[in-house]
Length: 168
Image (tube, rainbow, N blue to C red):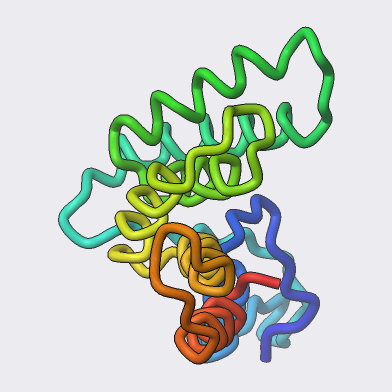
């Protein structure tokens, strides 16, 4: 059986947990030495793609997204504008995680001017690809009630779906 499974390059959005769950179901023949099973370390790559998208392009976008996100979260003033520009360009390309993150920024009015209509547009677009952060932002918009009719039941439902999909 597999043991000590860990994700070396996490991508979030519930996919890390899905990769570990998938690996736990795989069947392997053990490595052997002189015909006896031995412990052996293996690195397994699990790739996730959105249906209908180009995996190579998506890998590059995922890397750009993760680097931009890390830079924004580090909050180094000299680097944030470029990272934000990268995030915006990824959103312009309709990359769901970037759409969702930009929706959150527009909702909060952090790093960009508050724009609830833009937050709604991007959250809807990313939610259409089942992005947990997009679901979360939609939930916030339904709780808020300024650009959509206030609907706490729908907000709670979206919040629960976001949580199940991996949004803390």
